Amino acid sequence: MTLQTPQPPPSALRAVLGALDSETALRQPAAAALRHPTGPLLPAHPLAVHVLTGGRPELPAARRTGWRFLIKDGAEVAAAAEVVQSAEGHTFSHFTAGPYLDSTVRALREAWQLTQTSRTRQQPRLLTFPGQYATALWLHSPDGDPAADLLIPLAPAPLGVTAHRACPAAELLPLLARAPLARPLLLGSS
Image 1 (tube, helix red, strand yellow):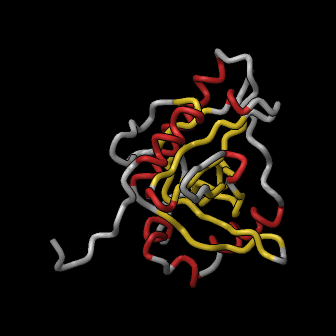
Image 2 (tube, rainbow, N blue to C red; image 1 turned 90 degrees about the horizontal axis):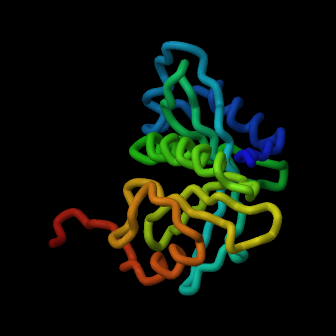
């Protein structure tokens, strides 16, 4: 079967388009690549963002917080825009830049290749693990078989987790639960 990308709600797309037209939003440091585009800036590859927290992470406990769109400047991905659910539908949250952009594009390519040989339908989602500073492309089986769900960890991945290696969610989630919690580095500490 094929990878089935769900359509984002219209309010999510409107929030991203509004941010791309907002001088205030484009002043964010992560939006630097968007300030002087070489072509039209277009939101692409919408992914529902799910967050998983807690000591025993299980996919049914992941809550959807919004959507992330890759922002293309011509053929290149220049940034990502995230929107969060709000009372009005969706509200622009922030732009992101950095290694997760290229890693997301690579994981989506890997997902397309995986689904070409699979009999199971898969929906791509973004799954974040705030305590481990980890993110994965979640290939969710909408047919309800949790054993068919796969995770592709994005780079950089936590210690003990191999980035860009698709794993059954049931194998990777316990590994992430045992991974040492990432701690922010404080300047002047050793």
